[in-house]
Image 1: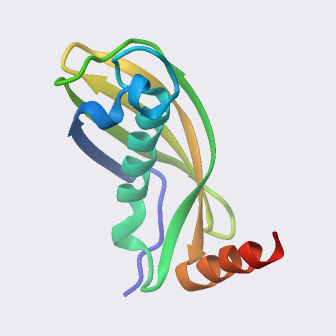
Image 2: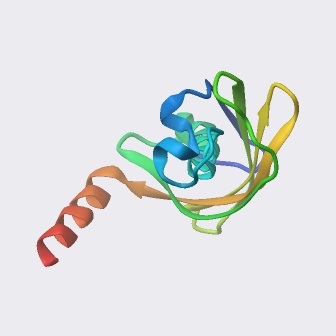
Length: 135
């Protein structure tokens, strides 16, 4: 029995801030704190995890939009938890809107909204490869 994404589904992902996640390492800044792009990646991962179990074989979700505030710095070595809650599903069941947040060991470090679209994995990858030959 196929289950479709439904508002209220939640996902979570946790990690420890390591060198490769720092702004100074990824090029998004000059300080040794969790980089904003890496925080957004964690939020996207939590959203992906929220709906992954209910997607049919061969389907996945891809990020299409983020509106995020990064409100506090997190140093190397600190644990970070990312949470996503599915707040809306489009009429065709493909468009997904999430409320997302990130927390370190002290408190909230980021929050916002994130949108994803459900796609056929192989067709999507094929489309990307076709673009490579057009450039």
